Length: 282
Image (cartoon, rainbow, N blue to C red; front, side, top):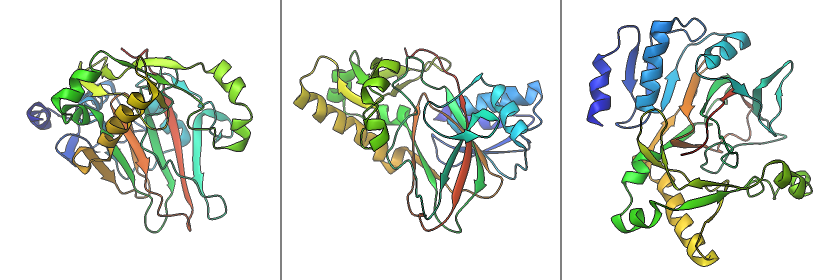
């Protein structure tokens, strides 16, 4: 934590204001639609330090959103989510009173892939008058918070991630389960992941997509996963962000999980997201 706090005096072009000691910071002094190379370097460093960056008052276009995202990586199309007309790289996450929707389980995005996303950039388009916050969990801190016995148990183990765990309760996707498993076969990833940039380690299992621990029987696997999933629920490892108009938030999908507070279903909420292509999990 000390190293991250020391970084606060190392920026010339942006101002970084932490929201918690280990995860989440508000960044000011930058317009995400107009990023030169020097400012990008500072934003990238802040992203690696704080995992979740919040940019307020960003009156930008769809083209700005895409261009900002492409500073960090090429963009991918989500396999299931609807996308913006003419822009398959921009998915639409929308909830209305008639069709309520929220990602109500802590998760990292699409970990059933060989190369799950590096991160995402989420742009607020319509917010409820109250509610609809998003919570991110710092899975590096969550790993550090484990007792020594559990840590020793997981250090060299792998877990199986599957596309169908999170979708089988949805009728049309349940009917396509066999097809989905063929298109997106189960993947094993290390339970303790090493970040490819920072070298820091994090807990890399999530309730949405992690099916079982390789090499354990079902009962032991289920018990261990429940213990590990609970780490994301600890407020000590979380940052909760309240959305405002023209807010843009980016997060590192490799070392965080996120959850939308489902307290807004009587109102309209709409977000637009780009997803940054990642690399194989190590």
